[in-house]
Image 1 (cartoon, helix red, strand yellow):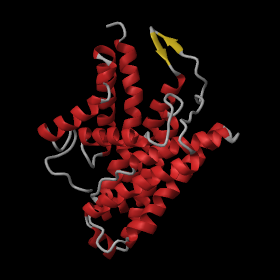
Image 2 (image 1 turned 90 degrees about the vertical axis):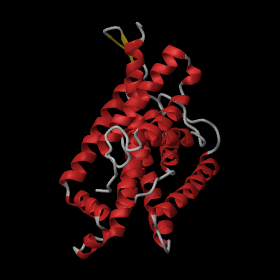
Image 3 (image 1 turned 45 degrees about the vertical axis):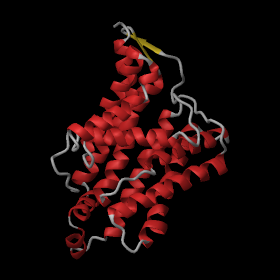
Image 4 (image 1 turned 30 degrees about the vertical axis):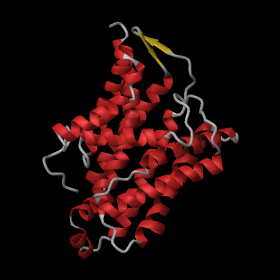
Length: 290
């Protein structure tokens, strides 16, 4: 049991990344009612582009910024060039189209950036910090801190800013919002930009701890989706709660039982959530896109 604090810290770090991925799922769901299965590929793309930028001798901060901007543009183009052309952009149609976009994104990254795994150095080096019996990788602190900032920023954006309130209005009543002068297409484009940016940031901050490659996004996407369902699809606080819960369960299962069970935790959590509480931990009996 002496390793329990370290396992919980590792779970908090991994869960923070899952929370960012789940946040991207929830932003799109709140705006369109659809499931963005390209979110995992955007996470992978963020890590790969950041690694490619750093390999090209870009400063680390600029490489991460390049990744966020590149993936954000990809998200905006996905909405403007593809989704906006759909005759009937219902939730099911958008979900299916996003699966196709995910496949295309993975193939594009493979062709442009290659199949080899990519890595990034730690933002503050890789020398572990010993504190009270805990061995903390400096990147873990970056992951937790950035996740907290993003979550607080997302809450403030949707609750206090004019754009955030406009997006909530479009999600709740698109027709009424349009009558008030709010462009639903603008709100959807902004939702895709935000989801892509958070995905890219998640990919960039996790890459120093785990190598990334063109086929890494599927796994991260599924775990982010499981975290979103666990916390409550459509709930921004639920993304954080679901991510931390899933990351902690994975870490405990891998450390106390066997590493072979680690990846099965997300499948089990998703199944139990669907069977026992489909609305998630913080979700309501009926999810409303507000």
